Length: 90
Image 1 (cartoon, rainbow, N blue to C red):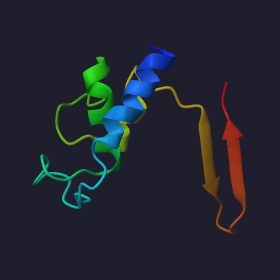
Image 2 (cartoon, helix red, strand yellow; image 1 turned 120 degrees about the vertical axis):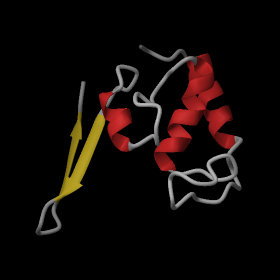
Image 3 (cartoon, one colour; image 1 turned 90 degrees about the vertical axis):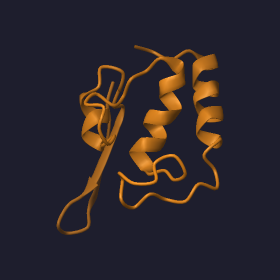
């Protein structure tokens, strides 16, 4: 499912509302008053009708990867010798 430009802008507005929230290191407790990385993405997309939390538990990176609403377009990693590899996916 593709996002329109308006939806992208709304997504950014939704994410901006979480500025100032403390980081949730437990990923489970105090979820209303704190946030963690993949939770930020999931909670910003949900009002737009995108369900990125497939198991309805703690939103993890695995939820984002297996979601039909996620499109991976960029991937990078460092090998054991510190060489960075970057892949742009079409």
